[in-house]
Image (cartoon, rainbow, N blue to C red; front, side):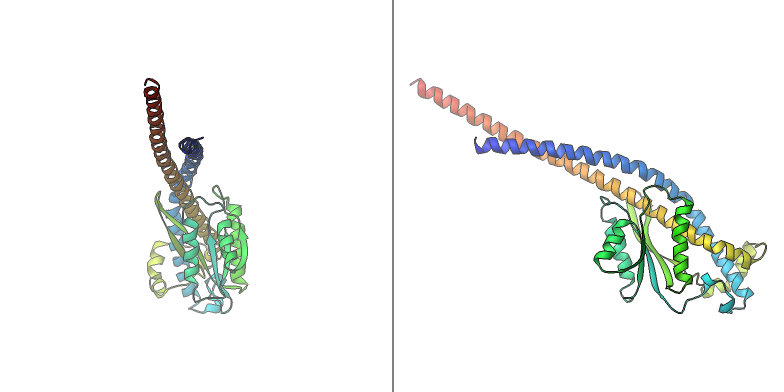
Length: 298
């Protein structure tokens, strides 16, 4: 068998393999697009509510501060600054890959926040983040699988309870959520969100009168605060997971679309090369036939 014939057979195998791969990436693109639309709707619908609820937290905390006259011992435990414990980072990544550099960007962002905190602990939501932390020998307090669909309130509540228990027991001095913040289908960015403690800034205390003019609390701000703060923790975790899911499915759809387009280009290149070789082979065979005929006619 000639080398040219071997080359054409190899090209046919490559064309067939690339076409099969293209079918897979196209199907994955369509699945990711379907999941992306649902997760985007959920993330964008709840984002204003989560933001307003976080603003209400400032109002409640400012009111509570006024009631106890700045005495930290009388404040709600979630408002106090712990004197012991290490920083806790809740890292939210995906369970599966094929979503571009999303997980790498989020993990590197989390690690970059803790360059000066070697004793920091991690809580992982998502297998990719857990594996990345284990490779770097980081301390993991707890690990959870991320969600392929919108999580239920019960699933988020168990995670929130574990986080608050670590904080209230003094094992964590602060809690920061790190996740991919969804912006658009082709754009996301890593975000670090300070979850606990519900620290008050000087501006929050100074502007407490403004909060009083906007909110009326019944029965009292203190009682509302005790009931609402755990729910706010759950809500922010829930929103972070939604943002992460929307970013993941968007990134996977874009990655699979790029892979499909690359497969199309490869098939076109292989086909062009195959046709060129095939044409050269036919030309060579015709030339041999013509030469042979001339030799016989002499």
